[in-house]
Length: 481
Image (cartoon, rainbow, N blue to C red; front, side, top):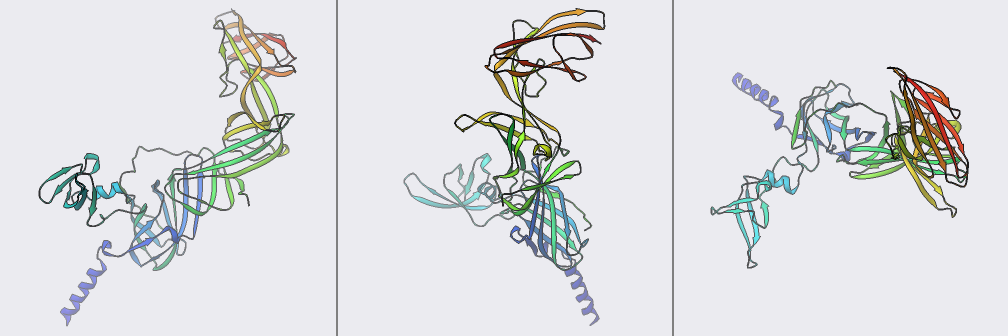
């Protein structure tokens, strides 16, 4: 009797320590989720958070968590139980993304028995048994049961069974130790590439060119390999630093050892850390391989100022490149840059932190039809900052910049004389700003017009140029090194 008891105890011990591979897997499918949240960054990645019920036994469990994004970063995963905090520990994690497809099935079937169904030249259909010897990259090679070898045979390959290890959707496979049996509301968070958002703006200028109506759009693009249904959506604006490692996570399977202790759509903005967070009112569904547009802001009767600017250095605007060389190296022919400026303030009917994006500007013609008049890119713009748009070059306001004299006073001091000729060929007057760049220590000793020092390297000459009038700005600057 004692020997029987010892044998029974040994058997129970063996059953208790049987490998977890022999235990049945718990499969969690995305259809069971009871909540998903998505924070999308304007750097082509997102943080996904979803909650699913998972029923676990006490101790070790093998859990297949299906339907994660195909472009997931497996090293970014966090798992916790909302039902019993600190009760779940991930002992091992595999990311599996070898999905079922014609190519993957044939790859997995190499060395396996198959049947080849093909038509002969006479139209007869034959079925032959054999073994698939190579994958399509090296050419399809089949060895028939009678010893013949067929290279790239036409026809249909029929498998006796589906190869193991192939998945219908990307999955995480966990070896999970549960300190509490029963159903857990498990929250899983991870980062994924392939989701991006950008802001686009439309500005319609009024007839007097004193006001604009501004509409902001968010464009979301989901190429992450997953669908997010009824998701709580947030957008992060700002330049969040990510460290890029030279790793290739694609090609089959990655194993990571982990140990964890446990109405029209409208956005509300808030300061978050040193960035801005825009939260959607309600939820939305972002399908795989879908591009979605949503309204970000709408502002009416925003005060705007139109300016014409000559910048002899071509650096007043990052995209200003209309300088044309003249007869000599010290001469440049230019068109005036068309600039729209508006204050991003509540007093000016705006005052919302603006994510970086493209601004397209329209104006109605005399028939009321909107015409496109230019576009520019803005960077992230805080409240109460100036939005400056370079949208094109003036047709009828042109000019010439010449360095007419240079004199060396000493080894460290020289004098330069510059003329900027502005020609207005319109039938109305034009306000023009001539902007000049000066480096090192400088002082304007002579000038034909009033000027303003904007900063240590910039001086501006504001001009009013009458219809079909030419105005020449001439100045002499002493520069010390």
